[in-house]
Image 1 (spheres, rainbow, N blue to C red):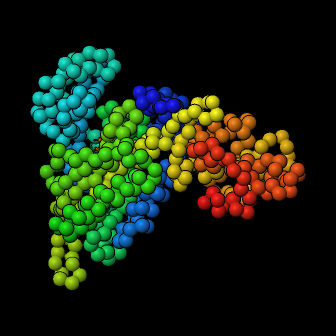
Image 2 (image 1 turned 90 degrees about the horizontal axis):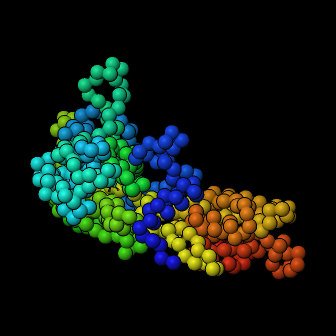
Image 3 (image 1 turned 120 degrees about the vertical axis):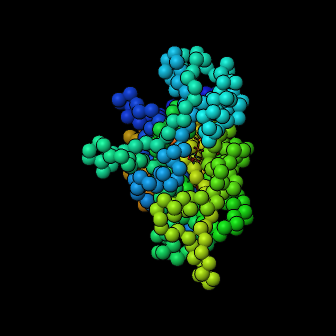
Length: 465
Ligand code: ATP
């Protein structure tokens, strides 16, 4: 059966709650908009995504280093990065019911090319010409205020004991600043030769005007960033390679190529040399930004050099030549990645005359590698043997589920929804009471095909690996 695209997002949100992947933040208090909590199965998938990303971004590369910087940063950092003055989205308010909209996104929705980097005057000109097409999502009226730039940085009162501090310490608006701030430390401690990369997974916070579409637009998020430092003007080939690597990575974790496409930025920020986004075909939204791959020239280090007064130039070992390296960046939100992976894996299909929901997740991403169950939970001899197998597999893989709830059919349905690639069932044949030939063999059921085969216990670990 083909999934109904119109309500696929609702189905995914409901599956995520039902099966312990993702919950609304602070749900028992009515929820906190734009914040989500990962549940027991969600955190496994999230951690597996991080591991896969780290492996591809550090271990499989040469001259790439990981860091983990503090979230809070000196207030001047966000002046240098341009966030205090320019990190804003155009906001308009419905005059009837006070609902706020993000004008650039609403314009795009009605087919007008716009983006958040446009000046207030530019965006208002476009807004005025399209006002008859944009209705308030809450009350349906078309009576909005003009668009105003709304800064997305989230303030904290860290270290401010008077409530009158003039230099607020912000929560990070983007995680990558921690990499720029540690660039000199990395050069001094690791002595890398250019080109070299620094990667980090870190939290970021944005006062998004209208957080929506589940994990797609949240106010608290995690970003996985790579910053590749290259010699000035030696950016082109490295940039193409980085783009290719990131595209291939999505394919390697099982994303279908037809659900990905590239989009080049039309309106480049003044310092950028080139910028492309990897777009994913999200349910309900259609193709939208999943990851940015940007050629940022020497802007970031030049800014920090100017604002901090510290020399951030790289010195060539042999010639002594000094220059500010250029930066090629990849940046993706883990929540968007999670949503893309779950959407891609989500299938509704007929099996044995019933409709099943199955998450066809890559084996290395699935919350559990395998589920173990005794055929019947009221037969102690089956349960004892099944526990033995469970303990053996747990030692090997760690992420092994014990499932003895309901009948075997129900367990398969449940594990299908969680995306467990294999179910191992210990039955009477395993005990070999009737037929000694089947002793110490188990049934292994494959998630994607529903096929079952017998595998001997001595081969089981190898089989599942
Ligand atoms: P958008 O135009 O969708 O607001 P952006 O261009 O501002 O995104 P960047 O600042 O380039 O995004 O951030 C890098 C990545 O971080 C994005 O490609 C996306 O995956 C993720 N991201 C950005 N904002 C959010 C958010 N509010 N919620 C979840 N992920 C986000």
